[in-house]
Length: 160
Image (cartoon, rainbow, N blue to C red):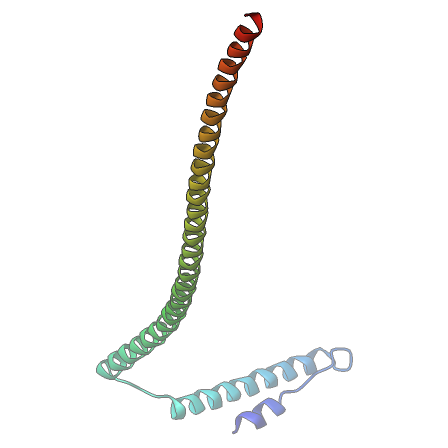
């Protein structure tokens, strides 16, 4: 008896349509058919079942563990590769930023040198102007002394 034929043969009994004894015989018939289906199913499973000895089962279990381990390791490798790629990208970005910072530092140092040179030039010009100013001041002081001497001479000559 096939599995499909057994299931299709189960009676669906309406309780209101059948009297008490008929219901009992229908229930027994259903139980008998269910037994036939179970026997058919167990026979089907016995023919299709795979039996392994302990050694074969051990090898199969070991292979399954190794397969799961390999899959987990592949996932870990992919995760590590992603981390490596992101670390390489971060290092590349850091190198770019370092070069940019070095370029900015060189530009700042060049500007500092320009400002320092300008300051030195201004200092030299200031010293030249200061020296010229002192010479003029000395000249004015000498001329003022001469004027004072001439005034004194004029006063002495006008009084005499």
